[in-house]
Structures are given as structure tokens and as C-alpha cells.
Image (cartoon, rainbow over all chains, first blue to last red):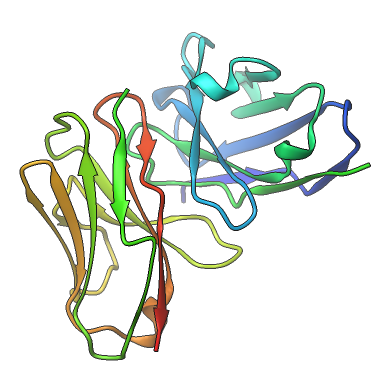
Length: 115
Length: 106
């Protein structure tokens, strides 16, 4: 069955960096783009952008053009989200989701940024 | 950029009530709209695809409709398990989510 399994929760300090993973299984990884979505505590879903799993080309939504990096390890069917220079407002759950019609989602990674 | 205006932001209804949530698109998105249900601590679950098509395993009390640029999710007879947040998403041009609706049971 199709699954997206994300890495575990993170507790970081402001200014630090982190890298979240999203491992896909049950389908051909390069057949579908990978989307990234942020959900701050008690808030709605915010689109961060996507990465073309065939070319590795990332596309970032306007609010995520600085400090955020999407990458791939295609041989491991894994997508990554790196956040640099963490800020308190990065505290959120981060989801990966497959394809344009986002039928499959990871379980989410809760990131807490606090001094 | 395409904006999705979702309403209401929250609502309270009784078991058995008919409930409707609406999203309005700022540009033409055709039927490229999905409705999600999200329960606390869980990932969003697709409920309706292509504006009107029920996803696999979704109860038939859920339905989607479109009138011009207005898209609606309707629950015909509210059940307790329907208490959740609901989100619309357009995928005509990149992705844009609505602001979400919190549905509570009276």
C-alpha cells in the first residue's frame, strides 16, 4: 500500500537548522511530485511548495522562499525539507503529500522552536 | 495567485442537521477542488475530489457541488464522527487551501 512515513518530532532553538524526511513506499517515487504543507498550532493548512521528483527542481510558495530547502534522495524514495535559521514562528506540524491531487499524506512532523 | 475564501470559519450543529461549508475561488479553477476532513492530531483525509466526486470509503451523507466559482461541501445528516476541521484545496494553479472550518456538535 502507498505510504508516506515522516521522521519524528523535533525540538530546536532559534537559529538552529533541521531536516525532516518523508519516505515513500508502495509506488514509483519519481511518478509523482512531492508537496509540502505547514500547519501552525490551531491554524489552517498553508502550502509551502513542491519538488519535481524527476528533475529535483523545487518550487517555493512566496512565504517559503527564504530559509526553506526541498531536496530528494531518489535512490531511497525520500524527500526532505530543511529549515535553516529557525524562528519561533516555524513552530508547526509539517506534512508531505503526494502529487497534484494530494491523495496521500505523511503523518506530519511536529516541530517546536523555543529558547 | 488564486485565493480561496472559505466560510464559515466555525459552526455548531446538532446531530441529524444538514450542514454546508462553502469555498469561493478568486479565479476560474474549473472543478479542480478537493475537500478534506481533518481530526485533531491527524493528517487531512480527502473526502471529495474534482469538486463533486466522493472519495473511496467516504459515507454517502457527504456530497460536493459547484455553482460558478462557489464550491460547497454538504453533510446531509450530521453524525458525531463528523466533528472535525474541513478544508478546501484548489489545484488548478499550484495549490491553495481555504482557511478551514471547525465543525462542532451542539
